[in-house]
Length: 384
Image 1: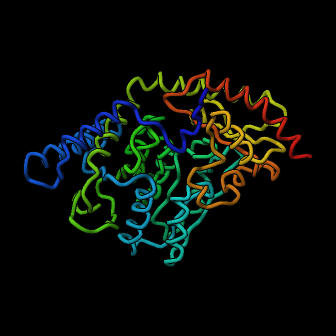
Image 2 (image 1 turned 60 degrees about the vertical axis):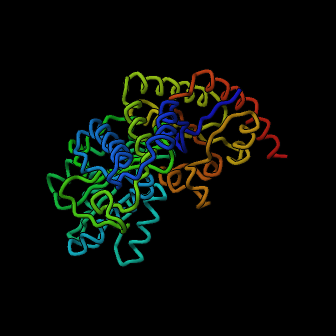
Image 3 (image 1 turned 180 degrees about the vertical axis):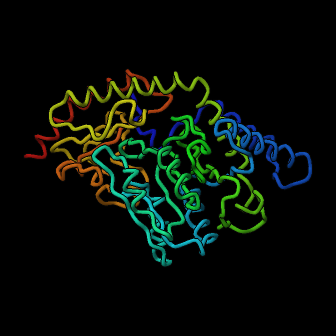
């Protein structure tokens, strides 16, 4: 049996998405900037994808900029607004548990002379709205808070933050990394008070190499990629038409019968959590109910190194993560786990299990049975 439980890293594309992308690549392969029929057909795929996304977000097509994925969207949001808002200030606020695609460009801004405040989180992984408000200065021009944490599934009070900012500090831009949230929550940026929002296709059973940045109309932001002037000059380069088409279809599919899909994910998550909590020496991190994300469970296994357990599970056809997949390029202790106060003995003993549309409760039961067999054995081996 095989159980792919690493959907927070990436997901298998929907078959319908694959079929559409193959059709676009083989039949409707024109350059969307070309004036002939093939080009117009290609351009229509981009327009249709934008309209589909805008239906979900209740926004305008011109507020969607297609990118190569979440990392580029985050970089565009930070560096683009820093360039465009030089006179507004040089202070940015974020949290200590953001993804590397937030922390790294923030570090770059610091090198460029900007001041970045990294807010702590509580033991559940949530930031305090009051602490955030207290951190705001006269020269704060940007705040970036992730919607769902990619390692432990904590959900931030995005709407409270957005409402507070629009009421008291409307001049400050509010960016949200929604890469683990889009498809899991019904998101309306204007209702949340969000100015910019990053989304990635391969987290929602769409293709890799495609994503988008929602930019609220009127937001001051400069392009960071220049060339042929595509997407009204905001992101030059020939558009990834198969990717856009696939992302649009995936967005439509994940929000079709959405409540039923989310109920299924929570049922799978609950089964995993209860099974893990029944094991000796296993700690499930953070919140686990409906006030946490439906697709992520993180658990520490006392006395077992995460990497050893990960590969032992892999030998049984079970695929999980020892944290963010992107963090494997930046080895070290997880800032998220330290941020929520995980004890030292579990920092290198934590695995992430994450679920998607194709997972079943039978796969969870199989994983739990294997863990019951492997964990005691690996503990004895480590002691020896």
